[in-house]
Image 1 (spheres, one colour):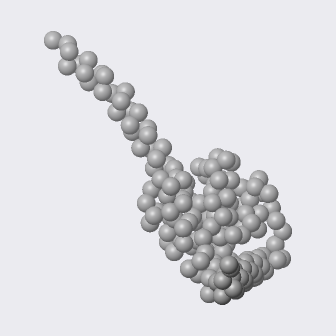
Image 2 (cartoon, rainbow, N blue to C red):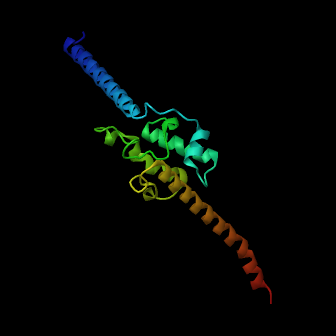
Image 3 (cartoon, rainbow, N blue to C red):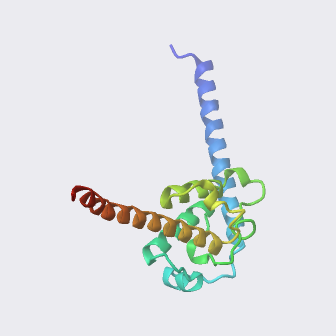
Length: 168
């Protein structure tokens, strides 16, 4: 026999779960709409146009696009709407009340994994605009390139040093 008390409790529990999920989805949707309202007067640009605005000095087109995608995912702002002067505490900032549920918290960690370096190298308080953060990425790539060149030079000079030791 079916215990009607357990069946009713299961149905009520399931309906409560569905209601909570629906409420969370609705609230998240409203938060995203609120965030996108900041950009309603902006024209969306393609990646080539954005590259002309940001003027990266060291990033290739692919690296620049990858940087934009990382910031786009973290901020939940389509990259075509971003501008170099957008600030992480204003235009790209989380909606008030959603600060701890925003992807910008993870942006330094993601950039550190993508480009190397420490979390502090990508701190959005130290690099307040999208362009400033892009420059931090460029610096990190330059440091890695320099380090790689130093390693390559030391490998090339080691055999010569060993050859000098072999001669009488």
